[in-house]
Image (cartoon, rainbow, N blue to C red):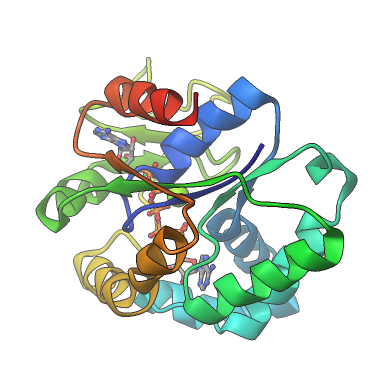
Length: 213
Ligand code: AP5
Ligand code: MG
């Protein structure tokens, strides 16, 4: 299975990608996570990406394409993967098509979670993440078992740096201008599966399963 999961910021990409990866036993290739790790380590990539991420802007295409090229060539991606957060621009999608051609592989489907913008603010304002293992929670829809503690590793959960109102606004603007055009791009290739993302987490999971089956 080679899948792309698309949604606006906070639309549920990570939540649903992790379900899909468990089901098909394939890796979740989450560009935001790769970048956040680089920022935390203050590597060259991290120092370069940090200013864009904090303000909610997209990191330049060339940087992202290089990250994906090397990640998808790793052996764990041989039997498939879920792309969470890539591609996000037409040039990124074109570069991905080239890479697939070079590697002689095909994309199976693009899952698009349609979530209205007013819902996004509620989702991101109440999201908490584990800075150690990356697990994601929502204080109402998906709270941890013990308040403020990650179920998975026991660390204190926190708010993500870019879940501030000003950064959310910029992320939504970037999504509208640069990422939304990908819907037509994949529709014209017969790969787009639109799912109503404004349902409970379990309902969205079932709708995706139905679409893929
Ligand atoms: P990234 O980490 O990908 O951020 P994003 O696109 O803004 O998406 P999020 O991770 O915030 O949301 P999500 O869709 O995964 O939702 P989640 O499942 O967490 O990227 C961060 C930054 O890195 C970008 O801004 C950019 O700077 C850079 N970047 C990354 N990739 C790039 C690329 N390819 N090109 C250029 N730059 C790039 O859910 C959100 C919340 O809602 C959670 O609390 C969750 O529990 C809850 N929730 C989920 N589903 C439901 C539901 N059905 N009902 C109720 N609550 C729900
Ligand atoms: Mg995410």
